[in-house]
Image 1 (cartoon, rainbow, N blue to C red):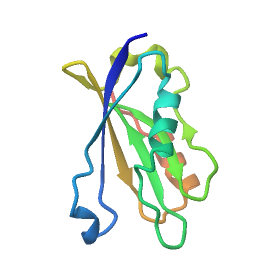
Image 2: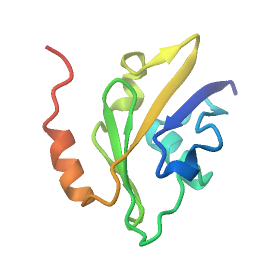
Image 3: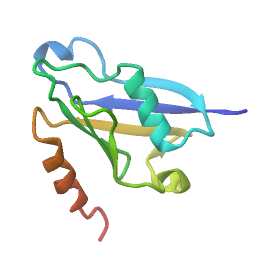
Length: 122
């Protein structure tokens, strides 16, 4: 079985969070779906926990892929067929790249509604 490299970067949650780089690279089996890759990164505790327990994040790779909320058991995915369209995701030198945006403690359902309405192509 072959592996692929994945790259994650994210926003800071506060000034003290800027001390270390947020860039993480992992090697994962190429058979993992986009859902499994995002779930893997959550299990790796890549995202910091926020006091109050209501941090909201969105995951992008050219298109919105998921919203992650600290109070949710699992992320909500936008693009169920993403694993079949990897060529449309952001990749550089064979590394699949993701960016995770921090939305503070905004209501994650509101973030989902806003991102569902985004049009990324003309």
